[in-house]
Length: 78
Image (cartoon, rainbow, N blue to C red):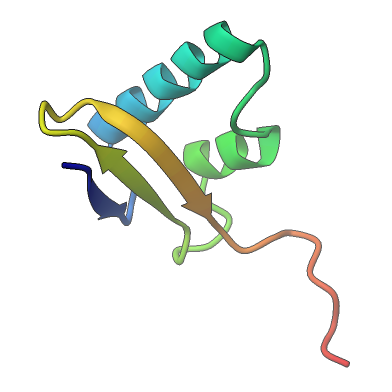
């Protein structure tokens, strides 16, 4: 069974799991799963509302990750 955890903030141990998952996926398909903006936000969050969602299997192995954060290129309201 897959379980999800909201990471707010992303703890150092969770960052290790996210990095490992990213590296494993890139080794398989040759493409970066997370962009530079995500890595910058993980290193120094743009906003305290930044968060991640980590999916883990029954053995606590990371199997998925999504990151949400406020963009630094927001458009003004219409």
